[in-house]
Image 1 (cartoon, rainbow, N blue to C red):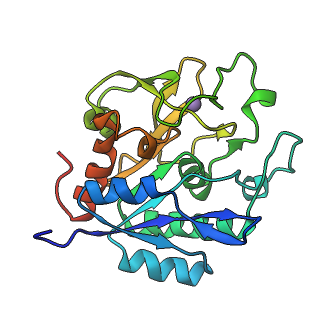
Image 2 (tube, helix red, strand yellow):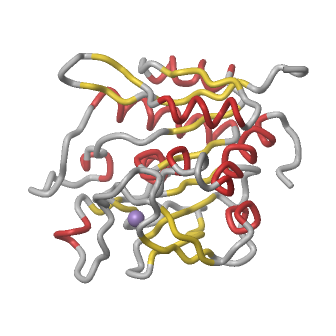
Length: 240
Ligand code: MN
């Protein structure tokens, strides 16, 4: 590598049975391929989150389990799944500091939901019980296989990165963004109206996607654009 890549912090997922923080290899592979240096972020307190954000060039909030509805002021409904309190508080702090410092950020699945909650938005705890006529968003198919379409808004960072108005994506979620956080814009929806992507138009690169591009880029190179865009922005370069 001629020029050292920017440091991209990636949040980890907690395996309760092994009491272990872990990170899927696909995230690191995508960051390396895009020209960045991935760093796994192990949860600490809000002060640790702030120090990490200061030192990192960019951040990926990765996929994981459900977000505790207490963070948007709700009691848990029966359809709410597993929660990891330490991951919630750490990642919410990472997202808030990132926004405050204007750091490039890519939120993936749970990561997009964390981003929205950190900025004051809310989530559906379980779209299958709270919405009617929803598509199957918890696909039972290989992770790299796209099962439903999304429709992208025109003139957005995401639309420019992906260069299309309609795309097939994978889907592994039963929570979804409900009330959009102030300052954010919806950039893609599924055919049932479920929010599939958002971004912060006033910041250089803050994107959330409900699908999993890290599981798709090896077979569909277009999805790598999300990571190359993040790495470019993290270098302080223009995204396009
Ligand atoms: Mn979906």
